[in-house]
Structure formats: structure tokens, C-alpha cells
Amino acid sequence: MAGNTFGNLFKLTTFGESHGVAIGGVIDGCPSGIDLDFDKIQEELNRRKPGQSAIVTQRKEPDAVDFHSGIFEGKTTGTPIGFAIFNTNQKSHDYGHIKDSYRPSHADYVYDKKYGFRDYRGGGRSSARETASRVVAGAIAKQFVKGITFDAYVSQVGELQLNKNYKELDFSLTESNPVRCPDPAMAEKMENYIKEVRKEGDTIGGVISCVIKNVPIGLGEPAFDKLHAELGKAMLSINAVKGFEYGSGFEGVKMKGSKHNDKFNSDGTTQTNYSGGIQGGISNGMDIYFKVAFKPVATVIQPYETIDKEGNMVKTQGKGRHDPCVVPRAVPIVEAMAALVIADYMLLNRTIKV
Image (tube, rainbow, N blue to C red):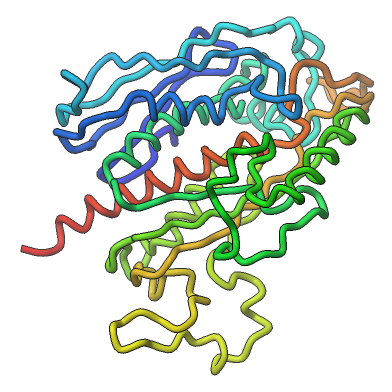
């Protein structure tokens, strides 16, 4: 299986499966001398880990990270940072019923056809559990690009949409509720709705918005490696993501160019920010903001019809511990992938000027 590495200079390679011994990764290219705050790294993992509230999967994992290389006396050494997160609460028997059949809208069928063999326990490598490794790397990337802030939050669950500009929101409230929506009234509605959906044995999708502040001018390349293109790739690589838009996004098509153009102030800032902080593929110093759409979790705890390995139609039912809505736990993943992109482009920028 190829495609396990993300990044150009600040690179992350991940390994492991949902029900294997461990998941983990190797961070290559991280500069030396970064004084790491290990508590903050664990805090990021705690935001993503299962079993943290009544509206997420009840799998109980401590998600404690063990570092094996690249760190000495609390600082990065510049050598590869190897780490592992050991799985402690697998219930592989929950997946015995899909050993010879394929769950609709999962990777089961295409994995089997591509590789001729698959780990059916929790989806194996296709499980969103792999994203815990991204959160570790993203937490380190955040500490490398200190001063740049990443604020992701849930802005939509199903048809419940937070129609407020991010500038009206208090991001300090994001972690005050299990949905991770910084608007308390909307957060309560979202939480109640997710609970209703869960009782039905069903799932629901949602949207995560993210704002990156204090990004320097000049990150990104003008052709294939545009900053927004890399952010899009990063977000679309996250499990269950179906869409990405930045700046004015799809709504921008309704505007005329004379209104959509971001007029300059004398200091180079712009009066509006429909560009989303990126012009010509390069950051312009304004806030970068984008949205990421997540589909409803494919595993529904309801009877359904599918096919087995021989192509026969069979009836089965979803089992196991699953999120009724993935977006609350995906907030730190979105931030982590954004941080990896920014860290990578910060290093790339060091190579262009004498």
C-alpha cells in the first residue's frame, strides 16, 4: 500500500490498523531545537479520542502517545520523530459478521478488489483511528509555527447551520460543549439532534469550519502547489470528507467581480477577504478560512442488504461502537492537517531566498 506519507519537507508517515497492536508514525524533517509541550500534545489527542462524551463512539482508548526517537531532554533533535499509540480496547468480534461481506459506502469492497485481502476488523487501515497519528504530528507542527493560530469548530450538523461570520464567534467556547460549536444555543440543538439520530440507529453528517490567523505573506507556490490546493488535499485525505471550500467558496459565484474583488488598504491588507487569505495560490497575510464537509458515518445500526464475496445478496446489520456524527471528534483532525500544511510551507519558504 502506497500513499502513507504527507508533506514535502515536514513529512508524516503513518502506520497501523484500527484493531492491530498499535498505530503511529514517523515525522521527518522537523527542525531541531523545538521545546515541546507534551501536555499540549496529549490535550490534542484527548480532543480526538473515542469515549469522551455521550454523542461519540464508546470505545474506550486512553490514546497515550509514546515517543521513541527524535526527542532529547524535551526538545526535537532534527532526526526522525517516531511515535506509537497502542490500542487497548479492541472488540474484533464485533466485525465477524462482515468477514465475507461488504458494508455499503465503506472501503471494504474496493480494498478487497485492489489488494485481494483485507483486515475486516474495524476497517483496518481505512479506519478513522489512523487520524490519531495525524493529531500527534499536527500538535508538534503547531508548536513549530508558534504564533499562528488554528481554530476549527462545528458549524453545521445535518440541516442545523450556524449562520454567523467567524468574527462574531468566541472560539474560547468551542471546547465548552461536546459538539465543539462555539455558539452555546446552536450547540445544544446540535447535541440533541445527534442524540435523536443515535437512538434511531442512524448517523448524520456535518461541516467543520476552520480559521487560521497570523499566517505570514508568501506561503504557497503559484502553479501546482498552491496553498489552497494543499489544504484541500489535506482535508480531503481525512476519512468521511466529501467537500472542501475556502474563502467565498461556492457562494462567490453569485457575486460580480466588482464586489468580489478585495480592495487594498495602503498597508497591503484588504478591506474584504473573499479570497480567504490566499491569492494566486499564495498567502496574503489575511485570515485563511475554509469549510470541510463530512458525510454521515457509513455504519448504521440497522438491518441492511449487501453483497458477499461471491456476489450473493445477503442481509446483515451494523454492529460495534461507532460515532453517530463524526464532526465533533474531527475538529482537532482538521486543525492538525492544517498545521501540517502550514509547517511544511514555512520550511519550503526558507529555500527560496538567499
